[in-house]
Amino acid sequence: MEKEEEKAASLEAPKPKDPNPSVAEIEMARNSVSWDPAKPSWFTPKRLLAIFCVINMLNYMDRGAIASNGVNGSRRTCTDGTCTSGSGIQGDFNLSNFEDGVLSSAFTVGLLVASPIFASLAKSLNPFRLIGVGLSVWTVAVIGCGFSRDFWSITICRMLVGVGEASFISLAAPFIDDNAPVSQKTAWLGIFYMCIPTGYAIGYVYGGLVGDHFSWRYAFFGEAILMFPFVVLGFVMKPLQLKGFAHTESKKALTDIETVLPEGQDVEVTTDKSHASMKEEIDNKNSNKSSKSKDSNILKDVKVLLVDKVYIINVLGYIAYTFVIGAYSYWGPKAGRSIYNMSDADMIFGGITVVCGILGTIAGGYILDYMNSTISNAFKLLSVATFFGTIFCFVAFCNKSLYAFHALFSVGELLVFAIQGPVNYISLHCVKPSLRPLSMAVSTVSIHVFGDVPSSPLVGVLQDHVNNWRETALILTAILFAAALMWFIGIFLPSVDRFNEESEHQVTRIERSNTTPLLEERKEETTETSAQS
Image (tube, rainbow, N blue to C red):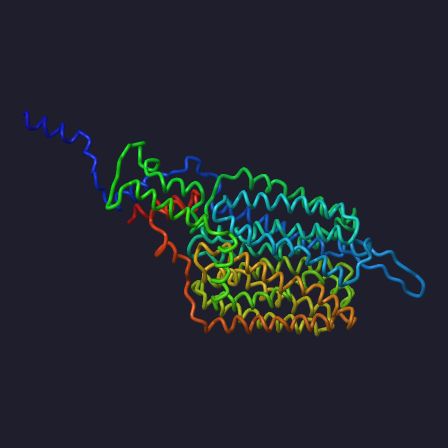
C-alpha cells in the first residue's frame, strides 16, 4: 500500500528541471508560445490580398485619369487666325506634347529616391507603417495636383505621387507571395497585378466623366478621398512580418528566453554555452547588422542583384515591355481618337483595357501554376505570350477598319497582359527572401526610369516629328519584340528557385518562428501540418 502511494505521489510531483536541455527542447519551448500578445485576427490572406488590390488599383487609376482626354485635355490651337482655348491640363497650362509626356513621367523621381529607402527600412520597421507614411504623401500630393497653377507646380506634385507608390509596390508583392497558397502563388500575384490595367481603365473612364462634367481638378480630389481610409489602415493595422526579416519585436524575443517559455515558467536553460553567452551572441549578431551603414547595405544588396543573370535578363525584358505599355497607356486615347476618329476614345480604350487586362493577367498566373511554377516555365510563358501579342497589336494598327482594330488589339492586349504574374514571380523567386523587397524596388524603379518614363516624352517628340499617330504606334509596338527576345534568352539560363533558401540554410528554426507572417489562416495551416506530421 505504501509503495502504491509513493508511486502515485511520484507521478503527481513535477519533474525536476533539466539543467542541460537540448537545443531541440529550447526550440520547442520557444515555438510552443507566441511572443507577440497582439496578433492580428481579422487580416486573413484573402482580405490582405483584397486590400492590396484596391490600393494598387487606386495608384493606377490616378495614372489613367491623368492620361484621359477629360483630365489631360488638348492643346490650344490656331488655324487660319481662329484659335481654340484647349481643355484640361494641357489646355490650361498650354503644354507641348513633350511637356505633357514629362508630366506623365514625373512620378518616377519620387519613386527612384524613395524605393530603396523603403526597401531598406522594411528590415527594421513595421512595413505597414511605412506603407501608411507613403500613402499619406500620395494623398497630399494628389490634392496638390488639384490645386496646381502651372506646369512646374503640378510636376512637383506628380513627383511626390511616386513616393506613395514606392512605399507600397516593393512591399505588397512579397507579402502576397508569403501568404498565398503554394499551388496558387502566381495566380495570386496575377490577381494583384491585374489591378494595373484595371486601374488604368477605370482611370480613363473616371477622368473622362469627371473632367467633362465638372473640372479636371475634381478628379484628383476624388482620388484623395478614396485613398484616405487606406492611409488610416496603414497606421492602425497590427504588425505583419515578411519572410526572412526579424523586426524589432522579434529581435527582442530572440534575446529573452523567459518570455517565450510556456505558462510563465522560470526555467533556466544552458547548453554548451551559457544562457548569457547565447544572449550575448544574438545581441552581437544584431548589433553588428545594425552598426553597418544603411547605404553600404543597400549597395551590397544591389550588387548581388546586378550579378544575377536571371534577374537582369528578366528586368531587361520587363523594361522593354513597360516602355511600350507605358506609352500605350498615356497616348492610347489620343492616338485612337486621331487614327479612327473615336469620339469616345476614353471609354473604348478603358473598356478594352479592363476586360483584356483582367482576363489576361489572371490567365497568365493560372497557366503558370498549371505548367508548374518554375523560373524556366515563367520565361517560356513570357516569351511566347509577348511574341504573339506583339504580332496581333502590330497588325491591328496596320488595319484601317475600326472593328478589325478592336478585335485584333483586344487579342493582342489579352496576350500581352498575361506576363504580369510570371515576370514578378521570377523577380521574387530568383533572390533570397530578405532581398525580395529590394528586388521589387529595383525592378519597379528600372522599368519606370528606363521604360515608361522616357517612352511618353519620346513618343511625344516622335509624334511632333512625324505627325502621324499610326506610324508612331507601329514603331512603338515593334519594341515589344525586344522584350520577347530577352525573355526567350532567359529560358536557357541556369536558374534556382531561392524562395526557401534562407529558411533552410541561414535562418534557424527559432528565427523562422518569429518571421513567419502573422496571418490567421497561415497559422492554422502550419498547426494542421505539424499535427499531421
